[in-house]
Image (cartoon, rainbow, N blue to C red; front, side, top):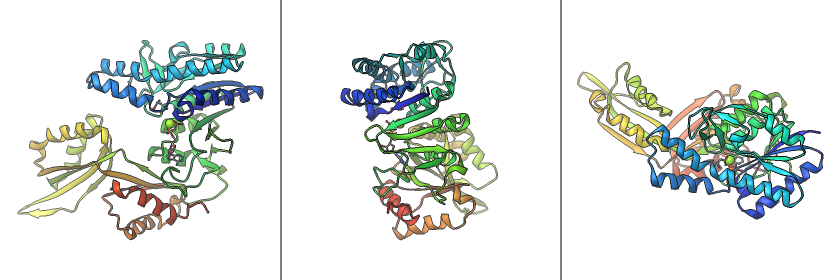
Length: 412
Ligand code: ADP
Ligand code: ASP
Ligand code: MG
């Protein structure tokens, strides 16, 4: 008998008919003689609605207020866990829901983006051994001092993988609304190709650059604990994508995929003195305010009298933009910059592939392809296995499709 964790995302449990469909999938796994733990997301759209309600009554200035945010926002998963347990019982599968506090599923107290600390599996295993399917709400945690937490957007993936690791499950199947991991978002790039296998490293890079099919932390955790993760559709029976070690990816490829993120905003600080330490003066206070700066470019300097001046352009998350601007405005007297210019109509496009370690010319292909389409690049950043560029959001889809073709990724 094997123990399987099945995680179902928001679209898979979007309404009661879909929940009944999920119940049938769980039942067929049980009928193979397996023990099953199911992790569910909230119905699609629910978490967004809950966050809107919170924002309508509070601007969340304190940690106490953030804790209440999590009380509200975690509730969507409580609803679907109970509904799925009921739907399973309705088709004669004995099932019980167990909330994070009942396990307990411990996290730290970084509300809204809490990190998992420890999962107690005793109560869960007892239930499994009684022949029950256990349905656990994803995304939820509980602190040692019994406050409810949430694990960040998309966090149910991480709940699923963490449970699979804690229970030493045979597999963690992540059911979603596409058939697996593709070379690009299949909803934007229609020629995207489904990958049979993807290396943990590649998936990590894709997830961190915007491919929201898996939450980044779930991939990190799967790699660390060697969890066998499979991404597949809850609406079809086609084979999905398996996460594997790099050596196991049979099909050698230079580029794995093209990803995007609309979540960035560009900030330019103009007319700052070009002198040692200036970058630290700008980015130090941003780091202190826990603002993550992603891409950075410093323009060539211009001379004015005896002094040299420069412009610094960088990106921050759109949701951090206001906080970043108030930090920078507070520095106006010290930095003596000329102007602060912002642009949130931008998108980051990235090309990812472990082949970049050993092949030159892959960045050049990106720049040439974008130039041929007349797309201007605002900022560039690279790492060992990715190249990212910031462009105007209006050209995003054009850029994705052109790059997908240029790197030979299109479905034949
Ligand atoms: P769930 O609710 O099941 O967690 P998500 O919406 O979080 O689903 O993630 C699935 C979505 O991820 C897909 O509908 C797809 O649009 C998007 N996506 C982005 N990049 C990729 C990719 N490379 N492969 C597959 N899906 C992707
Ligand atoms: N419901 C949460 C969200 O929408 C968690 C998840 O679906 O993974 O982000
Ligand atoms: Mg998701």
